[in-house]
Amino acid sequence: MLWGRGRRCKALAARFVAAVNAHDLDAFAGLITDDFTYIDSLREGVVGHAAALEAARTLFDKDPGIFVEVESVSFSDPYVLMRGWAHSADPEFGRRRAAWRARCEDGALAEWQSWAEGGPPHMSRTYAPDAAVDLSSRAASKPA
Image (cartoon, rainbow, N blue to C red; front, side, top):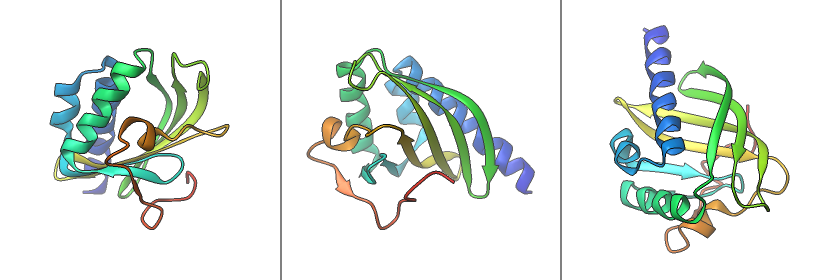
């Protein structure tokens, strides 16, 4: 049933946002698949549970003020689509309009893509330099 899947995936995305905002690595780790893919605004990213967890750990350590503020959520199978604001203690980033796209798979988050306005930073290269890869072939170029 599509409605049930959409509701469950939106709830999973909300738990992921809560884990990111709390900088809770245990919760983060428990919500993502083994082959989880994170894609940043520049269509670069990291693939794999361990790489994503290490990137999150580095991000939370280097930017203790980072958090996500979601203003709207919708579901368009197979994606949860969110819009809102990304906040950072880093004055270069500050507060920016943002959009996110999440894909759920078997009760876990399989993919998270983010977009931020205004010349976004190289998130993947900055926080996972050894694991960052070009994902432009599988990433949407802009939010839906």
